[in-house]
Image 1 (cartoon, rainbow over the protein chains, first blue to last red):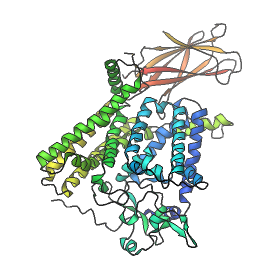
Image 2: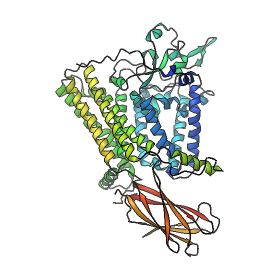
Image 3: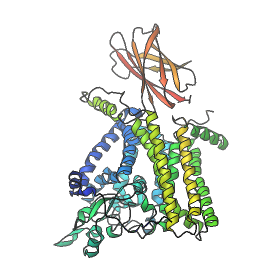
Length: 486
Length: 117
């Protein structure tokens, strides 16, 4: 039988921090600020243009950069490297600046130290996106960016550590789940060095020798103790541990993508994945939300919504949209995962509760979810790759002389038919990743008949992938919903 | 069917306001070629002939390829163009008109709910 040893770590083949230029840059103490500053400036420009610029989405920096470039670059960087957006997050720049003047004193309430609130906000984010047609509204997009800055500032002004990142930020949760697929991980280079370490600066921070209460370099604010950290979940790549470690024993190290989804060892700051119902729910929302978000772009969604509106006799979109969300994010996962868990028990002979099985195997849906998000976001990114050029040219021209030249509105991106091939590849690779993850879960969990445990979950992934292909085959239709029109 | 009257010059106007009305055919519009007819008049209702009119169509979502077309004058103050709508959904068309006297007019109007082909 195929054996996988997930505990032994092979000698790292690649460490980003050992590269001559990038490594040296990232190891600088203020490297994070250096990366955050450009994104902060761009964010400020997006807010101003969103609020005061032209309100036609393709001509506004807020909508163009947010919904075309940011989302696409984010998912591609997650695929090719790791959670580098959180590293360069501009919201944290403002929060860090504010903390120079007032330090928070409170701890995040114990009953909120889970992902349920963040899952709710993630779903709310997806809901608001559809309800307010955010893709078409520079004004609302600008306010969304403002609300992220305000939320991060407010929460982290009151509560200690990285409360906003770990327990609240919807983008952060998306990145945490998606980065399980990433090929790079902030990890210890040599466990023996950690075993001999007495200061544990990576978690405690570096203190001023003469004044031990004064921290001169933060340790991990997300409570991830490097020697016991497993994978990328909850890691913002902030590199505080890298800067704090006196032995230079933390790197950004290559690993096999998605294997952490199978690893059920005790994780610092997280516990056991198999016992985290909230993380499992996040993985489920991540996977089915990908399908929902893509479905909302194609013509059949309007037929479904019109039909629901007629059945409910309503002319407002919110209840109709809430029903669609309920079907996709609650009913569909309940039915599919419930059936898969029942078959795994009955046919595979696994003597665990259905809920426990659903929690364990829900992580196998992350790769297919990632594949669909990647297909969707990279579609917009690649087909609109160069659109930031004329939009920026026009924005500069609105302020004065067109120093960047006249807007070249014909600059668009790659042809749609080329991008469709890439999209299909993303979904296929996601499906293969989910199948492999399901099989590894079945094979490593002392399942009596691994193949019989594998098949139901592989079928769930296949159904999701098939639905994604169906969505991709439908005509795209991007518009607001007018109910009662037929 | 004449769908709307849009009044006034929003940008680069150097003289009195103009009226711009437009007609889209077929109704409802579908993905593919649609014909847009623009009628330009001054405030007294007199047709404005001899203008150069170009059209630019954008989707409501950023990042989609805009489509461009030049309109031909088919009668005094009446300009017609075929434009290819490449995707279903809401389209925003910007009509750029340059009058013989040098005045320019940029005016935006919507083609809502363009249906799939």
